[in-house]
Image (tube, rainbow, N blue to C red; front, side, top):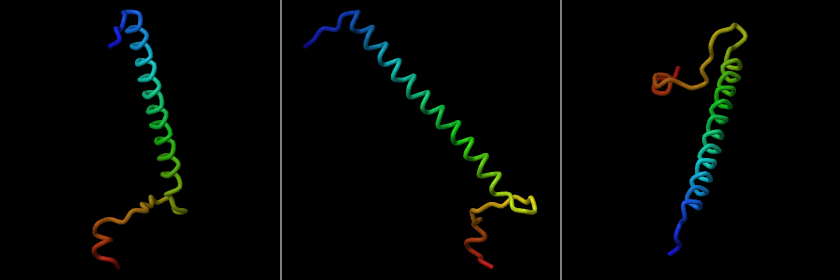
Length: 66
């Protein structure tokens, strides 16, 4: 069994904190991208009349097609 000296413990803790920060930064970046994609999709969903178009069918439309 290896003994972890306080110096090694500090090094491991520092590495772990850096890894956690990297993961958090990646997640925040993905959230920003998701928001940008949502904005683009919302803009594209407006038809020529300026009405909002929802590409997903409602439960009623699925169960009672025209």
